[in-house]
Every structure is written in structure tokens, then in C-alpha cells.
Image (cartoon, rainbow, N blue to C red):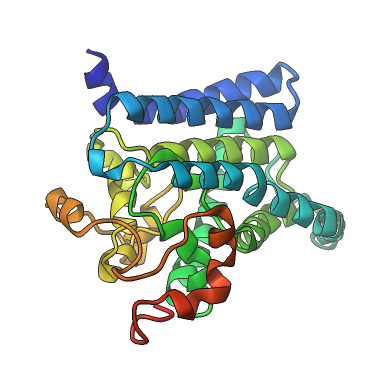
Length: 302
């Protein structure tokens, strides 16, 4: 019975449950940083444990070097850039937001809406920004080496959702959230969005059997996102949504081939022959040595 729940119910229940739990903690007065940290840690431990027991594809299991590197990404690569951005720019952005409200004569953010509707608005706004940032990271030659780090694993397990270059984190965090800060979105909504995004990202990369049906037309489910990690460029340059897949549908970049065995056969990661150093330092220097690790000159900067 649990395996049936895991297959059909774990994903939707986790999204709903994470938001519900976060709202409860926020209304109970728990500090926002604690809310985000506790929910993120809970799903890291949960997804990691589940895929050890209910592995879908044994060939996607992590190795020890990858695991150590991804833990360091979780501790350093995802936290330091966001704090640097906040320290440098948050005060300036909030000041601009106040002036913007003064110019238009009213508060741009609908503060009187129910919290769930505010969250929905935040998701729609940020996901639109995220979609185009993510698409540019794949299609602009000088940006791809920065993002390629996230795609460098031949394996597929929950912690690669945390594998992001600090430069990418600085760029994506800043651009995505600046828009909401400028229109006055409250910190509570930002925290709820972060909880939802981290929950989806963790499950999205988890190597357990799940089925999604119509949800894969709305959300960037694991079965959608796995094709985004294909080593075949024509497949991986699709499915850019972080939480939602609706912008992929609108802009023609959603794919979900029927034959999952093709993905198992072709494999994940970067094109064959790319020289990947899976140490943490190797990950950090990857964008700066990109040409030297390409299998040949024709594949450089793809």
C-alpha cells in the first residue's frame, strides 16, 4: 500500500503538505528562516531515504564523490550567493519599491488577498522569470558553461537539485526575486515560495517510481524534468519550468516522450567525452575551463 502511495500520492501530497505546514508555522510565529530551513531539511532527508529503499533505476545511484560535493553545494553554493545579493542589493531594491508605490499612488502587491492566492501570484510571476532565465542558460553560449554544472552528473538523485554554480545562484536568485521585491511582495510569501520550490526540486530529482497523469501538464513533475537532464541536447533543451510546466506548454518547449527506456538507454548528463571532475573544486572551476573539458571543438560551448 505504501508503494502505491509513493507512486501516485507522494508528489501531490508533498507539495500540498509542505505549503500547509509552512503556513501553520508562519502563523504560529516561527521565524521564516527556520521555516524554510526545517522544510528543506525534512525533504532532503525524506527523498534521500526513500530512493535508497525504493530505487527506480539502480544505474542512476550516486557515488561517494558526488555525494560529498553536493553536500558542499548545499552548504555553500546555495547559501553564500543569496546572502551576498541580499546584503548588497536588498536595501536598494526595497527603497526603489517604496518610491514606485509613491509614484503610482498605491501598493502594487495585493496584500489583502488570502495567503494562498498571494502565493499563486508569486509562483506565476517568478516561474515566468525562471522559465526565460533557464532557457537562456541553455541557449546562450557564454551562459551554458555556468549552468552545465547542474547537468554534469551521469546519475540522477535528489541532491543534484542542489548542484548549482554560485554564479548561477547569484544571477537567478537576484533576477527572480527582484521583481517581487519591487512590487512589494511580503517576506512570508517569499518564504512560502521558497518552501514550495525546494520541495518540488528535491522530489523532481529523486530516483523513485512515480506516476503523475494530468499533473505533468501543470507542474514540472519528475517525469517531465528527467528529460531535461538527458545527455541528448535536443531533449535536454526543453522542459525549463522549475515548479510549473505551463510556460513550456505556452512557448512550445514541453516534451514528454512515451518511451522512457530511451532515456535509460541514452543516459543523463553532458555529451559523451566531456571530462567532468566531480570534486567540489572541479565543479566550481568548470565554467572557467569549459573549452578544455569538451570532447572535441564541435561540442565546445554547446
